[in-house]
Length: 378
Ligand code: ZN
Ligand code: ZN
Image 1 (cartoon, helix red, strand yellow):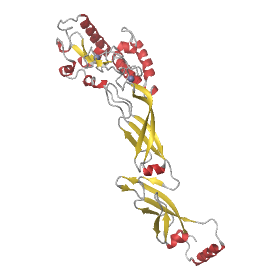
Image 2 (image 1 turned 120 degrees about the vertical axis):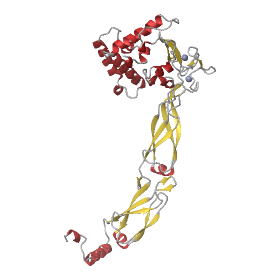
Image 3 (image 1 turned 180 degrees about the horizontal axis):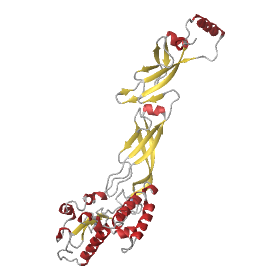
Image 4 (image 1 turned 90 degrees about the vertical axis):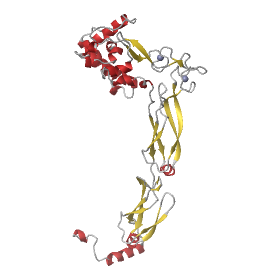
């Protein structure tokens, strides 16, 4: 039985968690659990932290009092605790037969884990830290043009949600007053509760572990330290940013709890298209038409880049679809630029002048070999 005992058993009334009387039948407990589990299931409460906590609590409760073997052990522990309370007043020890038959006096809960060799689990040690929580991260999207992505730009971003209260600057106390140290726990956030044979550290119920008491709450946030509002930021977007890139703004997420740090804001950048240029990583792509004589004889052709045209030397006998690389004319990146990938397409004119027609006919007659000869057809 000893291995089954958990520290939480002293602190949590699992019957209360499931809303059933202490003498409830196993069927009643199961029914209550199913109803609550359905209601607070994470799938039905996406992103709802309270529901998530509740669901964990419900599951933990059912794990114990829904278990035929653990339930009587749990009941014994609870009874022992209650008996201890009734008889509190400095007498030594509680009921006999406690793990190892030892008689406990006042023991700091922090040492209990060592004494019981992990009997109560390591979780209890994180209790104090759990009271200060980092704020949630937020995500938003910023859309910029292709040109702005190349140049770099600064875009405005709006976020609506919990933010530090502007009236009390997050303290939760009315301006001119400040939170005082909790009188019950002296600011430690924990109190000792006599459980009969020893005392245990527990989250202070007066300040809920924050260690502070607010006597005069802030009129805007009623002591929460946060208010829902719209915040505006200017987000600097670096030149050469890629589509779907994420920019992190540390500390611009939701405020932390109990003095914990704020979360971060992640801005996802959506980059618009361009009528001429495409993008492959840090390289830009462009398609450039060339005439059949240019491709056949070779030519210097002008190609557009993000900063003006450049001349590309197309060698004679260039097939349609061949790609040339123009160094350093791509998207900006750390320490330089990507390249411009120029794909040439042999252009077939839709209409021809009399002279062009005559010359092409002459060319056709002069060509001895069929281009389809290697396919075995003429
Ligand atoms: Zn406030
Ligand atoms: Zn307190």
